[in-house]
Length: 167
Image 1 (cartoon, rainbow, N blue to C red):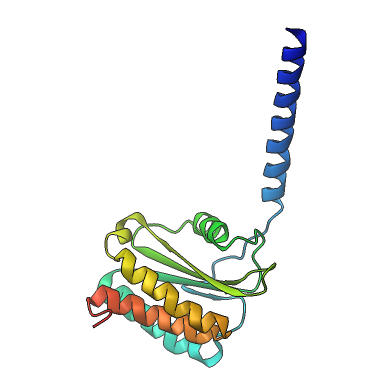
Image 2 (image 1 turned 180 degrees about the vertical axis):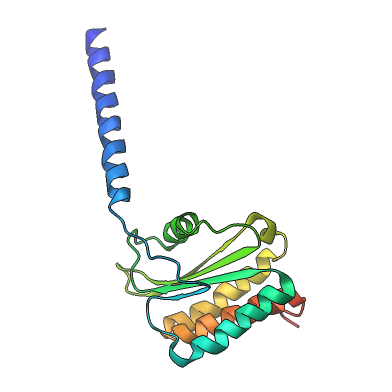
């Protein structure tokens, strides 16, 4: 009985220690601050930024959808899906919002794309359209055409909202 309690207590101590370490690790991570709809921390847009901003404004006015873009070369989690979720939470993105994250993975040294949709946006975009978008963007990202991938993602999302995607 004592041995079982000792093992249980040891396990509890290990779990508490792991939770404290994980919490401290997360606290040490600094996420980029939102600068607006376009957050080009990778400096990939250049002169295309102004036209892209106009497209985002048009989408917001026509469809009441806020597109937010993050391009960065640093993912502190080395997990694009987790990073996109943490950005969503940190930036407190809410209703009628679509987050597009373009990030360079640290271990693979390749660019990847993640998308996050607010709950009300999930019904406005078909899963097969989003998968097709991912496939098209993968082609550009493999060739390190990040600016093109960003521009194409905005065009595709607008077409989805208009109902003309894939036609």
